[in-house]
Image (cartoon, rainbow, N blue to C red; front, side):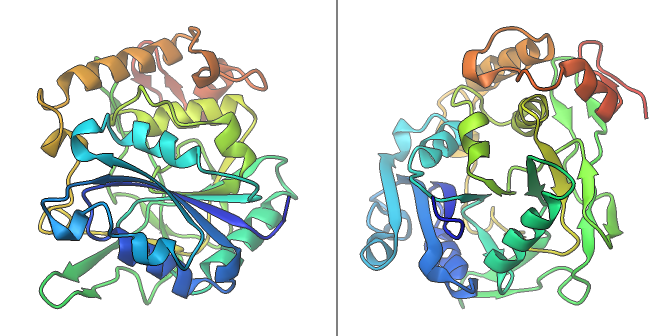
Length: 310
């Protein structure tokens, strides 16, 4: 297994930004020859900008593996992310990003260095980041207003605000940004940017039966109990689109589900609560390297009773 190859997993639902994101990964990398992509492409041939052939130009020239599904076949973001992960081959590193992202110059070198430095502290580290926002002018096709472009050490620190009665955790938003000078060990991850060795996607494969709410907490519980340590980097490595709704970039429950995602959401929350209770979810369940109780102590929370201690 090469120590240099990076597998980039991307789930894309009717997203015209996908080709631009892939191109950005390539042109911003120090070593684009070491990149390969696994894409779950959910398309609509009635719209040219999100048709099934939008990646064909790149797939012929770069190492892009694609599984294509008509949008009506989609079962949600976690289902699509799991499909993208199955396209991994022998790459040593893994990056999970959203299909509407932009990368910092030299992101591949930076990510590998951060991760390898962290291995001096932890045997199984990975990096997460809530990418700050950028905007896009649809008519001109130009990106603009990259947040914190002049202050690249301003990082959002994830903080659990509440857990709803049904078990839906909320720690979204840009509410706790700090200037970091060294990587920070944190008890929560962000699904929009995860960089790891590829063992992470083998051990913590996305649960295709999950849906949207609670996905990140489920992944973090599983990661922690499988012995993984989650760190924030000291610098911004990527940005995330701010005006996706203006560009018609949908969530699954906006465009696809006939019942607005209620059944899928309820099923996912049921599985999340099973995870909270340590019930058997097979390979999508609790690991055996650390306990759920240890995770609750780290996060300072009582998951079953929805209590946050700090």
